[in-house]
Length: 259
Image 1 (spheres, rainbow, N blue to C red):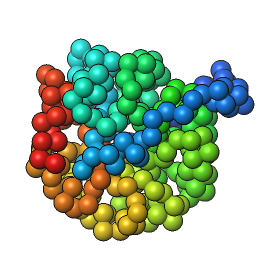
Image 2: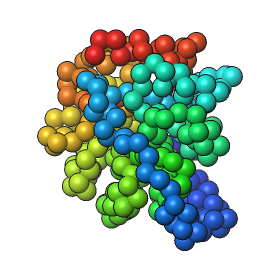
Image 3: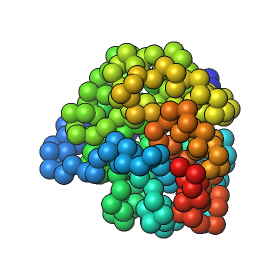
Image 4: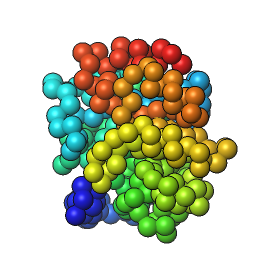
């Protein structure tokens, strides 16, 4: 079993427990009273290169990334220094995230937020809406074609936007076939956690003309960002390289200085 398969297996158990505490029907009843948040895609397209800055305590590949870890202070720095959206990890076991971090950040900033989670159930999509997300990550490698299409429709139905994540040509084609309008190319292989920007350079050739393309992971320098922009990416998602700096906000500003 690879890393992604293990995470998904654990996530199914976790979500079943959450559904037992608060059934999907109850969650959907709450959803109707939640106001629409700021537009994720508009925010990313508002600049020559959009920046989704990530709030992440740890990861299976990097271990503990930042200690002490203050999600609100980090998110406020991102907002002050020009980020266009904030990604907040929902997984606790592998990434040290969760609803408490997401809720605290949501209350502290005005930027659109990405519900960064291993989504395998409609319950999580409804939860993203209740939490005040503007966008939901959907990982193609974790879903069947039927689930992917259904979840994209479910996300749109709640006035949220799906960021459909791919890593290889097969997944890219599946995302395109499902009608994804915002595709995230993850430069990190979630099965092995090996990382290379070549993944974006290869897969961007397949992207539909009207698609918003986000390059994710392994982005460390202003030169990386400029190269990705030249290749056709519209936005980037960056976490680890910012979070290892004394000031993540200043690091975010410096990262975008060539675009």
